[in-house]
Length: 311
Image (cartoon, rainbow, N blue to C red; front, side, top):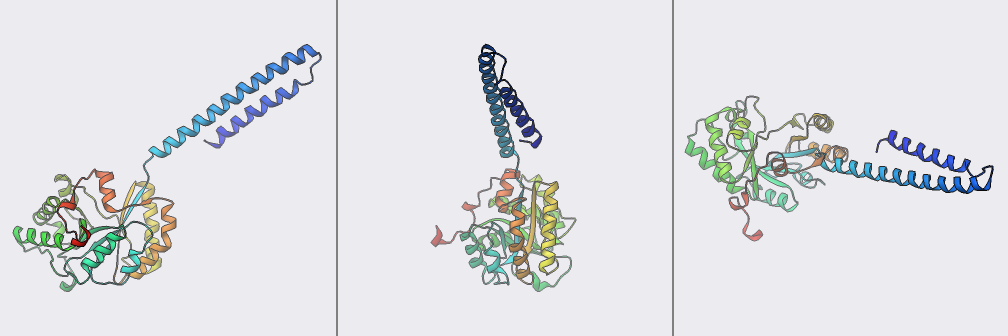
């Protein structure tokens, strides 16, 4: 209830009570008896009406708050799967996040299983050819621009099978491939066949992923803010402040950080900023976001890898 409404109700009750007290010293007993009884009835009626108004307004405000969509932020942490710095600290965050695990690396399965155990979302962090960058940064199983459709399909399928509990995918690097409609069409088709969605990391401004995803009936979800393009805690916190600014204009925000070189800085920045961020938005997994915003109903459980001891 607004402060103005509360003051108005309070003043009305005060006026009624004052009027009642003034009538306690009438000039004759008959008037005193009549006025006293009338005033009691009036005060009682006013009090009941005021109580009804207060309750009605409170209930209406509670309903409005319940119906108002809560802001949501999905934090994705890339580059897990190779025992990188910050992995343990990221997995220990006190909120739900999404980990993007690279396939075919020494701790791929371990990191994916540990993240799932802790209640985080797991997606495949698929290496894709960039316009620039060292070839060794790609990692095994990379998708390259000179591959045939059949080669792309095989690579994507193998990657999905190698990452336990995967419910989606995003691109590792990929500034060259994500602007290639032919290749990305194949990638998205394989994802959809396995019940997975694809998150565009936005390493290329001219990415065709959101457009293709929408045409294929998949959520056109993409990264909004990179957290750690500069490897300092102060920068990570500044980027998280931008997340808050973004949420002032939007209902959701997808933000991407990394383990590895930035890992400890990113995890520290997040640990420090989580309490403040929780005042502005609910932390959700990326699967929660695509379901609530785009109505995604993919069922990866029937097509993705679940370790035999967890079945």
